[in-house]
Amino acid sequence: MTITLLASFLCCVGVSVRQTLQDGRVVSVARYVLASCCCVLAAGCSVSPPRSQFPNVRAALDRMRATVACGVGVMATATIDRREGGSHREVVLIVSHPTQLRMDLLNSSGNSISTLTSDGTEFQLLDGLSGNFVYGNAKPCNLARLIGVAVPDHLFMDTLRGQTPVLAHKDEDANIEWDRTGFYVLTLRGTRDSAEEIHLVPYADDWNKPWTGQRLRVLEVIVRQQGFAIYHLVMSEHARRATAGPFVDPVNGVPIRPSGPQCDAELPTRIRIELPRDELQLHYHNVEWNPPLQPGLFRQVAPSTISMTPVDCQ
Image 1 (tube, helix red, strand yellow):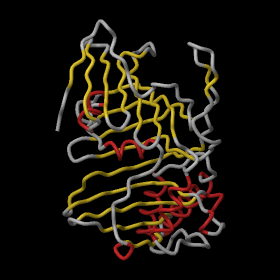
Image 2 (cartoon, helix red, strand yellow; image 1 turned 60 degrees about the horizontal axis):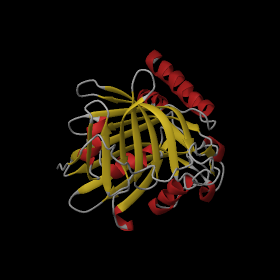
Image 3 (cartoon, one colour; image 1 turned 30 degrees about the vertical axis):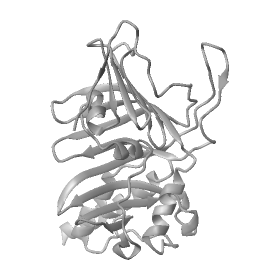
Image 4 (cartoon, one colour; image 1 turned 45 degrees about the horizontal axis):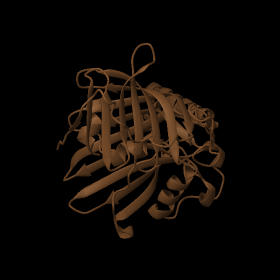
């Protein structure tokens, strides 16, 4: 009896924390774990769904995408940690949806020592440590030359914007339900015995709005094939982010405006991508939407003193 009462009290605390922290600033996945564990013990504690619920998976996915539709790009300083080998990297990221990426690896003084660019078709890497310039097709294994982990490019690009790839599926092979610990669970069944589970939760400010006006955070994603996990994605500590200001080109003095409209959608501060043989953790430090994009930002010209080497990988 004492254990049940204690569990009930903790569960209510967990729900209270959830409502308090969901003010559009900071959110932690830990509270869902706390609420889930307490609900199991207390057998009755639950989080009621929003008054207006999504009628189907398609509606929820449309609102998930619409939530960050204003954000066509992201610029951030971040740390990237890899489980295998324990590597730690400080980087500057610039992303332009859907396929353009620039990533600068920084040294302890904050200076760029290696630069990777990809326009979605070709990747280039200027490795300042080895003095090599390599180029090839934009593939996960080539992205791994800088970050150390071969994350599928579509997954990496979507994740940096707080989104997730969606498994191709038919409407009749998709289901949505409310988990009583406080989020929607979308279950999609694709071809070749594949499946995807997506956890979404509305912004606290939107809890009482019609579902057509609810903005959604992506909390967790699991993709499986033949019962085996292909990847497991966890996003936490969501916070609203501002649009980057204009930038003056240092070469010609021409101002460059942000690459998209004003945007204050949330982004996760922490992202964890678990793969079958490795894990990547990304922690945003400073991040803005829609940075100004200089011409040629996503393609590099090899210095005349360095030879260009084509590379390929699988």
